[in-house]
Amino acid sequence: MTMRNDDPNRPRPNYRGWNVTAGLIFAIAALFVAPAIGLEISAAFTNTDGRVTWLNLFVGVFLLACLFWWLLMSWPERFSLWRGAVTGVLVAFFAYPGVLALAEFVQRDWFDGASIPPLAERIDNTLLVAGLTLMTTGFLATPISAIIGMATTWALVHFHPLMAAEAARNTQRRSPLMRILQRLAAVLAVAIVLALAGSFAWLSWTPLDTDGLDIQASEIGPATTYEQSIAAYELVQAREAQLPLHERCPSTLLTHGSKVARVVIYFHGFTSCPAQGDAFAEQLFALGYNVYLPRMFGHGEADPMTLSLIELTADKLVDLANESTDLVQGLGDEVVVVGLSAGGTIASWTAQYRRDVDQAVIVSPFLGPYVVPPWAMSAAHNLTLMLPNLVLWWNPLENVPADQIDYAFPRPATHALAEIMRLGRIVQDSAADNPPAVKRIGVLLNEADVAVSNALTLDLVADWRDHGADVRVQTLPFDRHLPHDLINPREQHGDPALVYPLLIEMMNAP
Image 1 (cartoon, rainbow, N blue to C red):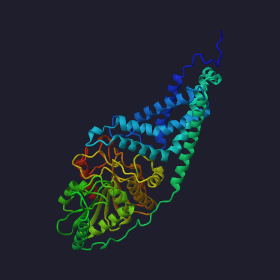
Image 2 (image 1 turned 45 degrees about the horizontal axis):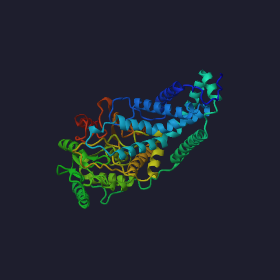
Image 3 (image 1 turned 120 degrees about the vertical axis):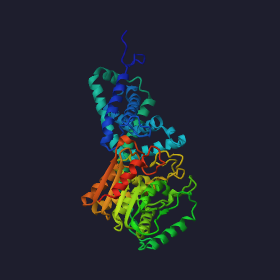
Image 4 (image 1 turned 90 degrees about the vertical axis):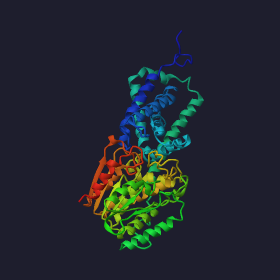
């Protein structure tokens, strides 16, 4: 008896090999596409800090490609270039959260820290980062993946014509429900591509608000004597005395009792407070410098669950830069500004605009997040501002803090991060057309940093150098695996014995 091709009882062709082959093609292609569109992928396969590695990327894309190829191609036995494109779009779309989930839930070792965020917060973390990177790079990744899907379909059909012909003759197993699901998948794929392309264009072209981000005198103006500087500091103390601050976190001034040759301002990082730089300040003080550690707006409160960071804006960061720079003018003949992370962004703004600063030393400034390529940063900034102001459990600019760092906030706000990026964007736009006001600039970067974009900082350095500025850059090698917070001696895996001398050497460079 001859079995008809549409007999429902005929043996089903085995497409497992096709599924695996398609998965491998997509996974290998992802290894080239991800860096091509600017995504940062770590070569440290054994890292435990949640960074996406080449292995995460390969495994995540492979599993998703096998799944979608089976659902949309092998199971219904329909192989066409259009279906290959639809499959490619869906693989790329779901690869963003899928790969990040592997890094977060399989590879990250939270037990190496003092506290583990709740599961819901870790899921929120993954979805937030996935959404940010998808909305800024997905418009490229999805059509590229669609082309890969079409090419894979053509190759499999071309090299296995008999199995392809058998699938084409099969009509009996295509149920109405399956046809509906296939059409929904196609509609979803088209909607994804159009939505990502349209949203990226809109976000990229939305103008940046720069009102108020310029040099403005503080309440008393630049100090001209030591006594005026002390009076200005006392005003800061009186203002902060009205706030519920942690005992280690008010603005701090270390002074030798008179004006000295050099005064250093240290701007702390996001969610930290002046105590972050206390050990570094003591070393500077021992060298004969006066040192001022101002407190950033909304930081340093005793209640770690405070929501004060919701109100942090770029304007307030500029106010801090102007007030602090004015305050220290009577404390030293030479004014040096140092800042880490968000404090590095403030130091960058000071370097660009304040001519009464002699030197700036910028440490891992937060001009944009590590996970977003530089060309997509405008869209990322606008997207973060347009979304609801989410309050997070973790600080994406820090590692899990040690027990001694009890003053760091576990709940920063997404709009606060966007406002820091806004300040950084102002500096970058100005530097493209104008030389920095500060004549000597030092920059310290960390290759192992997974919080900030080193590429954006190097772009800023290039602009400064194009204008003839003296900018010295040092980069800490990846193999030291240093954390983002290079200053706080209580930070896990930090190495102040390495970092502090480098910063002091930068200050003393001719």
